[in-house]
Image 1 (spheres, protein in one colour):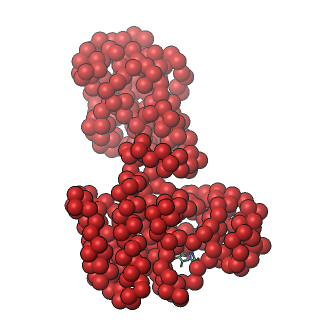
Image 2: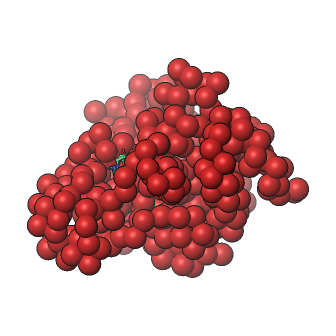
Image 3: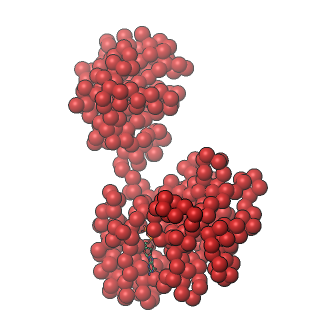
Length: 380
Ligand code: GDP
Ligand code: MN
């Protein structure tokens, strides 16, 4: 789960990482009132779950409350790479002398958290990594030993930060970022830019925090930060129904049982010359309610032109799945063509049940490849 900048900053604040004071606003009037309360120059920032807001015109300085109102009016409603701005964060503006970059992420290859620090902040970190790799100090933390203060010093020297006051402040921030990362079960905590003001004060001017979805049950406060409006309706429905759903951008909706089978189904659709619109994993079950839930989610995606049901009966028997499908189709009306491939335990009985009772838009194919070809053809 990705957090908005203002939510990430709230986490940072809790862990003692310095951030500026600010207010959330959903209308230009609220932005004006926020600027009034904050007093002085403010920065109005689009709150969207994507980066590069500055370049897209989503971050603007405002000299007074009326200016803040006008800037909020410019930014609210803006489309930043497909994300429409519905909230702005109005924050006390900072003077910037230097822009650094600090992040802590999970390095899956090394199975360890990885720090990255560079004085070349503000811009895309990928660009720094590509053009000036020597400027990027990197350091892994052994998760069993935990973070050690000497590691922060090594990072700071590695990045070439020489001012003793900056060193001291960044040392503290590096340690607190580790606490924040571990305590929140984060996968990423990024500060870009980490600024130094002309007075020598170091603070986080931006935040990018991703928390592990699988750990949200431990963090009700963070789970509550999820903004349902930031997701398309079918993703919302999937989460509510507990359906495993992934959105893709083709035209064949895919339903399978088990992650492995679903993955190969995506490949077979590609082999047949089509593109998956999304996929749902029914898991071990194939009961009618599970099928109804998955079909509701899949058909809510406007890109779906045909549905491919790929089921292998293992513990779940083919006849049960067939009954589930028929029961589901009895409960809901589906206009899309549906292609079913059923194999494994009691598959023959399942196919017979479908052939006897299925509506005209349901097609049963004997093999996975035949079914994929049919689904791709029907999606044209
Ligand atoms: P991003 O573009 O989505 O990464 O958004 P950021 O929060 O990083 O803001 C983009 C840029 O706006 C920063 O790199 C700063 O240069 C600038 N900026 C943001 N806040 C302030 C501020 O308080 N004062 C000044 N002078 N510039 C700011
Ligand atoms: Mn940034």
